[in-house]
Length: 388
Image (cartoon, rainbow, N blue to C red; front, side, top):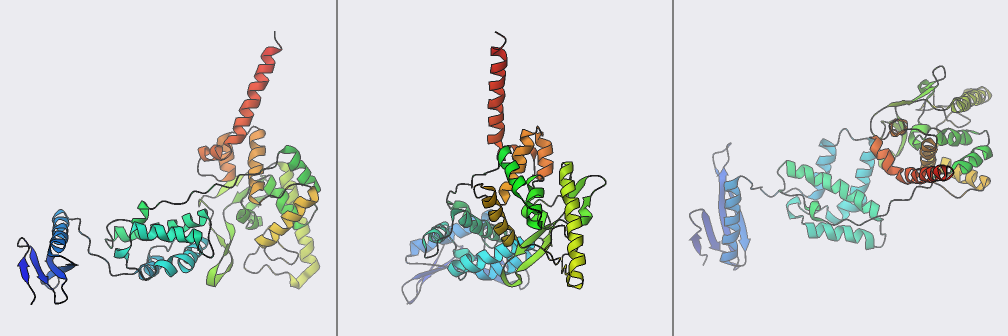
């Protein structure tokens, strides 16, 4: 026989036929139908149910109660991607989709948003690093970034009260140490390069510091030979997933910039322009720019350069010069170091590199300025010592 009992005049508690206890709380009135909105809670004992009901009523009273969402992580991720990420870059969207498809949904896709807990997500992060195909600490942090944004929006919409990712501990990872050329290495590398398009890319990048997408996406309308300037207003990016391929996209910080490189860089670009025109005349109708017309750096038939192929040529160029292996991004770091050595101030360096602030630039290259300060101190010591 089911037993019923009033709960402080705020609901009812009954014992079900299966022995469990159920409490029903009235949360308010549906403005559309005028009917009461009720919430049921369940427990093994009457006391457990009464405490749960009282907790809900206090939250309703204080205006902080959140009705548990019936949406699963998979259902909400599909809506979030469709409705709340329309302005993200294609490359960013592709990364989001990859993280959902490969990591988040297989583990958490069927879980209701309201059922997610910090401990559940923490275990998910830990498993990513110790499974059959473990991923790096940085990749775990990327997955967390996507999941955090997904659940942050769910909190804003009232689907859940708190974001469980905020209570998780993320793995530490060491940033890859930058390995720029010093001056002798930069000159050795420059002098060992040939006159093909890849050599041209490396030389120009070493003395402009452009990101790889920026230099591969540079077009001739952005090169002003009269003024000796280069405008960086877009980049060529590679997307993955169903629509894998290359496309133009906005810059990393969405802020175009104009730089004025050394005159010898503009001379190299003039040589590249002549070489490209010669290629175009030689292949005639076979010249095919495809979706990316007017690129500065192209293959012999006009198509854009593939980043992986550029990396292969960089490896060969370094081997030819007898220099240690480096990443493409180290050419950008090398430019920054050479600029600091040449006496460029932090604001100029920031503008040339396209960093958000001068402080960020100097933080990245603090080791360079520290060594320069130490050298300055030694020179001052020597100067004063010589006066004795």
